[in-house]
Length: 372
Image (cartoon, rainbow, N blue to C red):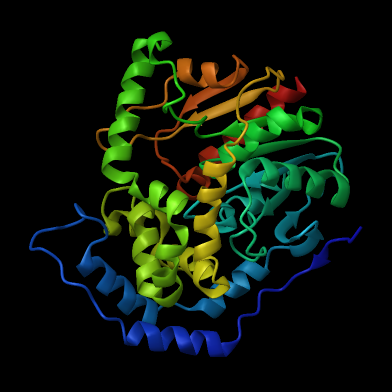
């Protein structure tokens, strides 16, 4: 059994030179007059972002900030797994597994790792197929199994708390189903969405409204999900070849179906580009898309057995026209095991990035409940 080894991010200068060449030689698409963001990522925004990328953004500075965390790699089965492991100075601290989704990365948690390590032993892996882990796209159930082995076999933690959003929520719920013996509880910002498997006749009125809003969201914004699930390789050629194409695809969702300038203010333009760079420099666009295909072929196990694992839910600030996740749906999806339920007032889909103070406080409060 291999032990984790320290890992340093060190991108060759030749890759950065190649990136600048590609950015300089972008072949821009046309755009209908007054399109704004109604058809996807806005042309004017991408030109301004690319100019900033070329002339102001500093990868080496970002690389140094990433290397300031304790990065490691470990080989488990067929996967070279990258993760940050920031132990607390308190040896009795509770282990905390932080889980990202798409189109973010382990970088989702860069604003909270240090503060959380005052209370927890913090572990932040790159999901296989993303970041500095190997390009091995796995269904979420297998990711849950893999992360259980990371936490217990390789890091020696007997039990831990999981927390995440998007794909991280799915992994957390899978952990509760497949490995309840190692899970103290899990904290999520979503609990799965009403879909073709849902019996709509039993839903309450708030749940019906939520389901309707989710359906409208998928009609308006969910094409990426179907593309990734059914034709991940077709789109991968463009995304692996064009940094601007990759950034435009990612920004379409990081902007929250709103406007890029608002995303710049919410996340920080340098931070948004660092997240894009993690996908570009590791060439993991294709493998990250294939994760959706794996989950379509092997649907994740997020419900079935009431394992009694305590759950905290912090609901996202809805996008315009959206409906906030109701408590009834959270209880339904977790067999009634929600012990903490808060509506976030300032954070959307990327809570730890958007409102780090709330995220940290909510996790600390949840951990105190579990100890009580």
